[in-house]
Length: 275
Image 1 (cartoon, rainbow, N blue to C red):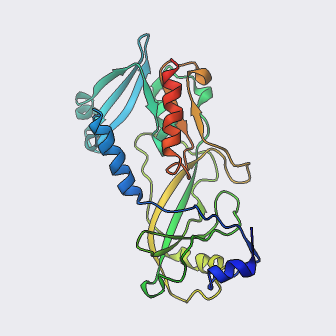
Image 2 (cartoon, rainbow, N blue to C red; image 1 turned 90 degrees about the horizontal axis):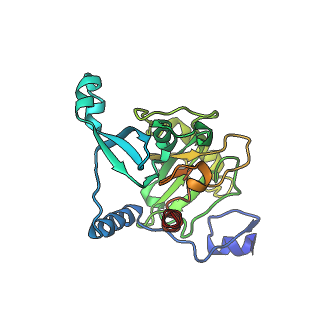
Image 3 (cartoon, rainbow, N blue to C red; image 1 turned 180 degrees about the vertical axis):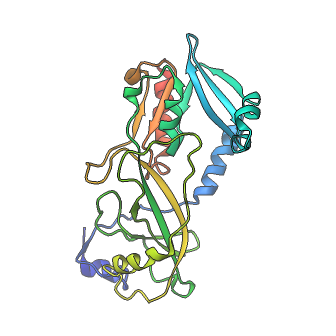
């Protein structure tokens, strides 16, 4: 725990009363990390079926059948006829459902799965704005304000090139959202939201220049609790929960899901290994 003066000596542009300093917090190249995982998996014999959608499935006496279809054909006008002929059925003893925003949609389409074990699905959108190039070195640490309901507040983050970005900020759905495999999500950043960002950022960075924010990118987080509700933890369901042999569901894997991904993988592996 730092007094405000100590924190502001570390970050001269910062304004605060107190701060919690985490010296071991860092950043990684998330895309490079995922490519490394893909390469490691392929070296171990894994096959990735890209541009393929799991459109449904059913529970059987011997395991789980998952129906797969080429993703492009799903959006063709005659997909109801042509697409059906392109579908294949993959039979497996083990299925790990880690479909993110569509994890609930996948298991709803799994014939025979008890619906009472499907949790509600709320979505929160994180819109990021980047800082003007001339001011990219204003901070050398990540800065998080006191958390707000549903998220971390408009925080300051850095990328590996030391560029400053601010975000995220808003609920996408205040109520349980029903998704299906054809649900599309809007990842555009609304430039008009910049004005809200200026006010929030200036509570801890009062010298933020005018007209220095530009829309950068957005992400959407699957959440298991809605506005006004107590924050929910990750939900990882195995046979001990829902009674279906060989099926592991991962629901609500929002931030810090990427940071925790290796630990989550070990947890899932242990559930499968106990079968």
